[in-house]
Length: 252
Image (cartoon, rainbow, N blue to C red; front, side, top):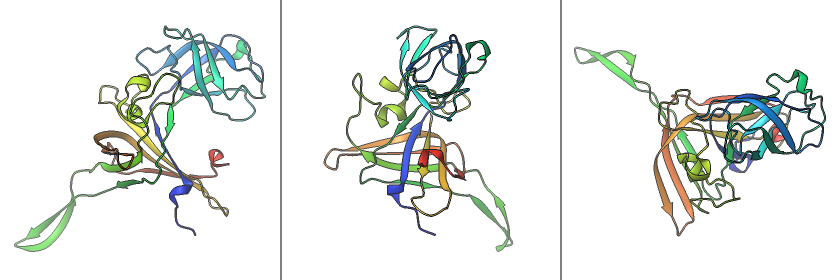
């Protein structure tokens, strides 16, 4: 069994977007745009589809994840048409039978760590009780949040029009990431994101591994111009990471 290598791990920052829509007209293979209606998202403007949203199409032969690259109208809701990449694949798309034909999932940004790293710590708190000075019994203390530290490449703090969202924008939910949705189930809580570590096993038959660090909130950002790195530290509102093993299609 080989040990994990950072080169085999892709680190993502992702939001909590979810929702659905229906097809307002039939779609066919190789379409780069789809017409939609009845958009229902967990966003502040529930029928405005964010550019960068990812989605599945019911009826598509391959379970392909598409990303929205443009929308119509561009600024106002409701969204009635989206441009997607990759284009629609083979399948059966019938607007007359289209309830929940479009399923929206989280927006995602791949982090370029360069020569950096990511570490996280799970911890427990115990209280050791004594009987007349002698150790007697133990009880569990308060839950402790996961602490996370990540260092990534310092390219830009803010993106310009047409560029990818920066990690700082994604972590803060600002500027080009202003339409990102908090990953917390309670949208009255401060904005949070999920951090996903996708470990694609490069050889053998062992299953791939996903490590999800949910509801991360940054507490400090350190910018090092000499090293061209940005370091972020913060905590997750959970005490344990969510770990899954599977033959991950994204690792193919």
